[in-house]
Length: 321
Ligand code: BMA
Image 1 (cartoon, protein in one colour):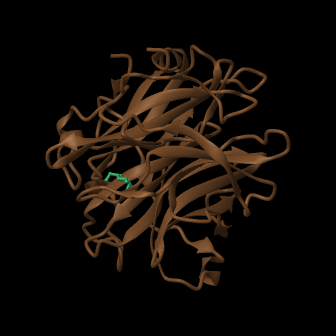
Image 2: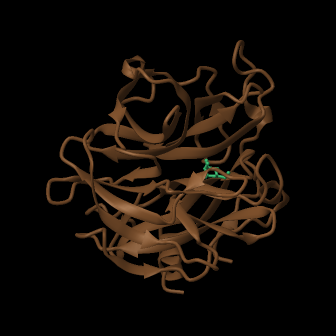
């Protein structure tokens, strides 16, 4: 297989989370990380669940992408107090750099359902809450790393269905656009789930990666037609560089599925859930090089953080298989 799991998997487990009163004592799980590389440093924002089933976000840093030092201080978004409704959980961060600023898009579980939230940071020390950016129930928001025709773009996945024994989900990824990053308008559907196959319900994984073959998108698909289990896998699609609502190619097969024990069993069994990707080499025009390594970070069984590697070229060719 062209995706190679790290020999150090799972690269972060609950045992790596520092014990800090009052929230971080003997936590239950850590998963679904956002990822970015800044100069030579790999940085993850990890989702930690404590034994009160509260969710905390922590920063993790590494010089090799596999061994991480984890911060002791849960992230706080300055200005989030302005939201009057109760926020239960903030989770599944996706990180995109636009200009000199890093943007974090995440899911917010609230009284009236799930919304997408946006925060910005320049240094991963201070974070500014920018607002709720989905008009309705939505998850898996990924911001594009550049504007197209002067507009900010995002893929998001409206939550329109409820899985049996599972969370609300959806079977279509939509393109949305904005001129100010805070107010968004849906342009229309991009990718639909394929019922009876591996990707019945779908959602974006890491933010889109710019390649000469199009926007490279890793997404998750859920197969629900098995007794008592929803199987979360990962696949790939390419979309048009100038019009990301247009699909160029889509993998018929998943590129990653639960096979190792740490993916097959845990808090939620049979889950690989990619949320971060690091491209090691871009050309001078900002395209990911086909021969570049890509590190894909994913949550396994909603219990631990894992990583696998491939090349950009291999992932692109998977979209045509
Ligand atoms: C999805 C989200 C993810 C989670 C996955 C598997 O719907 O809730 O955060 O990892 O289910 O439980």
